Length: 113
Length: 112
Image (cartoon, rainbow over all chains, first blue to last red; front, side):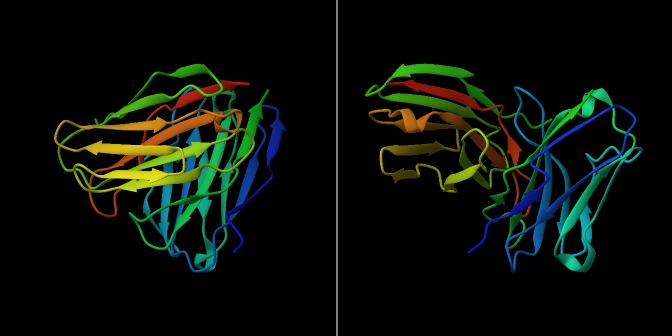
C-alpha cells in the first residue's frame, strides 16, 4: 500500500514569493491534516479536512496561507507571500477517520531566504 | 492551553545502552497518546497508540507505558542500536476526533 506522498521534498525561495505544497493521502483515508514543524518544536496542526470540508483551520494564518482539498483526495497548501518565519517542515498526514492513527508523509522542507 | 512536554530534549548513548524518555501531558479529558519515531529525511513512523491507564505496549526492543491519572508516558529502548537514532515524538489527543498535540520530541543519537 502506498503511503502519503508529498512534493516537493525541498523548496528554497526568496521572501515575498509564493509557494505551494502538494499531498496525496493514503487511498480511502477521509481525514487529511497539514502540520508545520519549526526547528526544535513538535509539529503543529495547521488545518484538518474531513473529505472536502476544512473542519479545523483555527491555526492557519489566513492572511497568507490557503489550502484546498478538491474532490476529497489530494490537497494543496499555499503560502503567498512567504516570510522568513515560514521556514519549516510542512507535513501532511491522513487517517481513516478523525482521531484514529495518522500516517505521515516525508514532509516538505521550506527555506525562505 | 494544552501542553505536552518531553524530556530530555536530546540524548547521546552508546550502542547497547538502554534508555528511556518521558512524555508529560494534561491528565484531564484524556483520549489517547501516540508515540512516533522520525528518522531524518523519512516520514514519522507510528510506534504505539495508547488509550488505557496502565497500558504497556511492546514492539521488539521498544516498549511504552501509560499513566493517564498522573499524565505521563515512558518510552523504553533496550540495548540501543545505531538504527534507533531518530527523534521520538509523543502526541496527545484530548477528545475523540480531536487533534494531535505534539511534544517537542527527544532526539536520540546512538553511537556504535
